[in-house]
Image 1: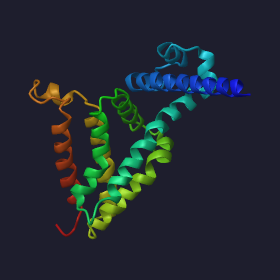
Image 2 (image 1 turned 135 degrees about the vertical axis):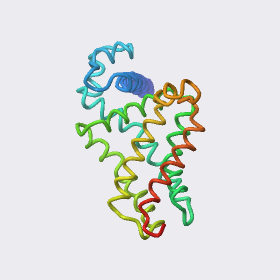
Image 3 (image 1 turned 30 degrees about the horizontal axis):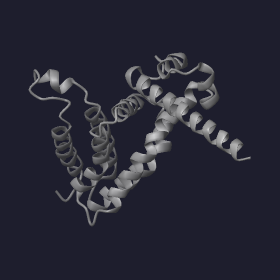
Length: 217
């Protein structure tokens, strides 16, 4: 009985490790090339597992893609919500700081999976095909932040706030993904990889934009 239980535990652990290897490989591949350009076989080759194992754990490429999105979304949204909940009568800059901060902290953590994940999210926002995933995994937290911004600015134009918030989201993802345009534009004087400076610049830019919709200013 004990031997059978130990064997079952080892089998489960091996299965979990295989699943994580596939998710890591898929995350990197989707971030680099997008969903359409990557085959399930390419992902399994990268993960050094069989195609049958990927099919066993995820079924289809679509299911695998959703699992890639969901895996880190839970961590990210929980950290954002915790930071928002910890604020006392916050202003716009503090609210946006609580929203942006976890992404930059995770991008600087040394875990290569986070930058790859942010590239996946940036690709999700390029069209409407995967909007249901963004809604499913991110809307609840995003709406809590929009509500906090509305509370901080009683005179804000709701349409302007929501549009401005979405614009800030796109700027955030482009920035945290370390898009090289700012480096080429400045001839190397400004580095896209300097996330400390980029985070501060983004926060200043987004705060000014969001606050411009407040009729009291």
